[in-house]
Image (tube, rainbow, N blue to C red):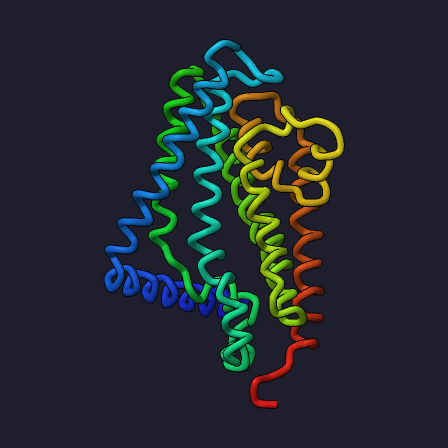
Length: 266
């Protein structure tokens, strides 16, 4: 087990090194991407300020609590982009070109390789902005965190990133059978805007959709509650169980997808 962990760590280091070399080669594109990624969050904060211009709270969430939640979303999504999305979105290309044959034959776990082989570490840079927004919101809310809160917050951030990754990978794996299945991943990504707002502001069936069926609503909401609201342990249990269930679902869908894959050499 230890030898396997060391081997996986070395593989991840190689992937990150490759990502750094890509950045050096295409640094102009990187700088343009950073500017684009920073412009949109500024507009979002402006939008939040407009919402709270004439009202002190929305469904129990104050302006700075909402800004805190938005800052957390700007930590989670860049991590997902850097360590999963940048690799997974190329799966359709690999299947069409037959490159997937080589990936399936590599002496490493296929899901592990498919998730991390194209790590673009610099896409995680916007999380610095997200942390800054969180610190600003905490200062306005006069929040003093305990060690327990910090540990629980980091744990929920990790679970949130994993849930987002698992949902996306389950959808992209359908490409093995249905090559043009990117509409499924587009659905997941289109729901990401829901992460920027608390679940409390939604009503009816849509609230159940984003907490049970496509559970993007809890990815940011639960970590935010650790910092600014009363947090109950049943939420941590639910998030953990959901991550485990999605992991099993991902493994089953991947096994099915590989069995349906027609090799380019066949």
